[in-house]
Image (cartoon, rainbow, N blue to C red; front, side, top):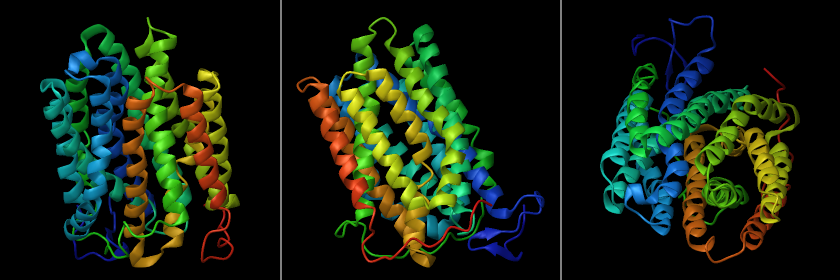
Length: 400
C-alpha cells in the first residue's frame, strides 16, 4: 500500500505502484465501482421481492412503498453529513464503513420482519450507499479528460452486481423464500471490503458550494423527475404490473425485466459515455431522456413489456451522463458538492416514486399515472436544451 508521502497524481489520490500499466484515475474508479457492484444487490433485490412477498416481511403494499422510499429520503437529509465525512476521512475509511453498513442492512431484511425494524435497516443502507455513491462519482470525475468514458465503464461494472443479484435472487426466492436471499447477499456484500480498502486514504476532496436546497437549477429539476419516473415509479410499478399480467411467474418475469435494466448498463453504459464524449454529455442526456419518456408512455398505453424494454435500454445509455454534466457545470472545489446536490434531487424524486406508486397504482389507471410521468420527464428534458447562465457546452476532448 503506497504511503501518504508519495507524490499525488490527482487530488485525493495517491500513486498506485501496484498497477503502473493503468492510469491512476481508471484504477481507482474501477475499485470503487466493483465495491458498489457487490453491495448494491442488497438494495435492488429488495425492490423485486418486497412488493411480491409483503406478507413474508410483515408489511402491506403501502408500507412496502414507504420502505423502498426510506433509504432515499434519509439521504436527502444525510448527503451533506456524508459528504463532509468523505472530506474528513477520505474514500477508504468512508467506504469501508459503508460496506459493513450494507451487509448489516441485508441481515436486517432477512432476520427482522416488521415495518419498524425494516425501516431501520433501510436507513442504514441509505447512508451507506450515499458514501459509496459520492466516492464512486467523485473518483470517476476526478480528471475532466475521459470523465464520461470512466463514468460509462463505472456504470457497466456497478450494474453487473444487481443484474446477477436479481436473477439469482428470483430463483433462490422461489426455492427457499426471500429471507434466504438476503442472508446470501449479506455475505456477498462483505466481499467488497478489499476493494474499499484499496481506495485512497487520507482526506477526501474539499466539499464546497451552495446549499443543496436552494432554488433548483434545471439539472436539479431533471434529476428529481428522472428519479421519480425511472428509479421510483417504474421499478415498483413493474413488479406490481407484472404480478397482474403473469400471476404464476411474477417474480421471475419482473426479476428478468429488472435484470435487463442492469444488463443494459453493462452493455450500453460504455456506449453512452462514448456518445457523451463525442456529441456532448448534455445534448446526449436530453435526447435519451426524451426516448425514456416515450417508453413510459408505452407502458401507460398498455404495451407493458415493449415499454419496459425501451426504458431499460435507454436508461442504460443514460446512466453515465448526469455526473459529467454536473461536474462540467461546477468544476474545481465545487464539483463534489454539485454531485451530492444532483444525487439529493434524484433521491428526492426516487423516494417519492415508490410512495406514489404504492398509493396510486391501486386507485388510478396506469395510463394516467405513467402518462403524467412521461409528460413530466419530457418537459424537464426539453428545458435542459439551453442551460441557464451558460453558453454552448465546452467542446468534448473526444474519446480517450
